[in-house]
Amino acid sequence: MNHNEMSVYDHIGELRKRLIIVVVFFLFAMVGSFFLAEPLIVYLQQADEAKELTMNAFRLTDPIKVYMEFAFIIAFIMTFPITLYQLWAFISPGLFEKERKVTLSYIPMSLLLFLAGISFSYFVLFPFVVDFMTRLANRLNIEQVIGINEYFEFLIQLTLPFGLLFQLPVVIMFLTRLGIVTPDFLTKVRKYAYFILLVIGAFITPPELISHMMVTVPMFILYEISILISRSAYKKRMLAEAERNKE
Image (tube, rainbow, N blue to C red; front, side, top):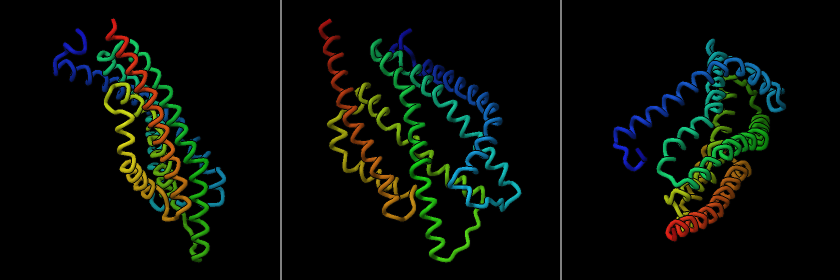
């Protein structure tokens, strides 16, 4: 039975199977992440940005909360490629053979971009933000008492969104190959996309122009790269359709 001949119930059953695979792998990854969470937390506490700060637990449950959050995030990252593959496996029967091979190659690219986004945020943006906050507290003569839960929550809220935002080129390329978006459409909605990215940047950065620009400018560049990638993917899609029509 091909993808087009499957009934709604068949699609739901197939989706259920894919979700079960993802959940089972996530549970196994969660077990492994329990062994990785502690070394990662200790490493982050020894980083230059955290060395000069004294971490405090304001509640008895703060350490276990931080530990579980990191275990969950590690398991999520480990499961990320499997999730992408299961998504590809669910939609691939509706694609042509060449499209299946091309879209399958997006998975390692997506993982690399996710890690690149997290790395950019942690090694470039996060130190700048911490330094800005520390200097501001000193100017205002405020004695900072850092809660370990609040520190790591801020770190997670700043880094994980960048991992997801760096998926934009791959998502656009994927949607273009499926015929859902076109480069002309992306160009037309550019000003609205820029506004949305500005709002996102305002939410994840402190109210300071330089740090805000450090976030929004890379996102604008990512969007422009996505348009260029969309043009290339669109041309390839048109050529593939022309070849199929000849056949």
